[in-house]
Image (cartoon, rainbow, N blue to C red; front, side, top):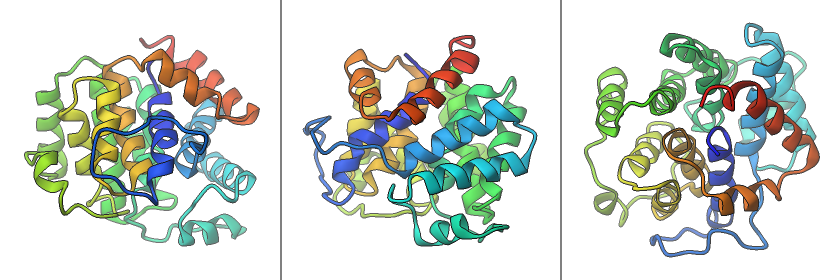
Length: 265
């Protein structure tokens, strides 16, 4: 399987390491405490928006608010919690990695890179209208779109560096000893992309991202969203992720997969 389940599985696997950081790739993928968090909820909120009406900002805001309030304890940032409670929410200049963690459905709906960028920008600006928040969503979405379109890792790396100014020539071994919890796009999106670039499989991507010892579920969600456009997700990861979703989230995932992903592979 490919598609947005890559982001969701990264979130679920990383969930137990978000507050228990590790600096090794040797860890248990799933445990009884592995759960979906805000990364999954918001990814599927974006998916539902695209299923309903990808042209409407009002439909986008409606779905972000609906899913956010349906799962109030999923682990949102403080400013987003206030956004969810507002009757007419406005963007709040966020540069946080929430824009990147939820963007993957945009890359699978788009029929061109330009459309992917348009959808990614729209998905971000209703909350994350800071230039860094928008850039993080765009860079992630571009990487996913290029990966699903058959581009090589070198081509993806070159595109992201040239268009978004992220330096991606560092190695994970170089930064792992001092890398810390960072929820900014500028401090987590490049690391997530390199987690994919250094990997040799989907699972290896997830292990790379979590081994940095940072915002584990979001790093793994972003990295996993790219990796699942490049490689198949192993069946054991698919099964162990899907069984942790409730019926509401699973219905959105299946509807999205059927309409956009199974027809595009």
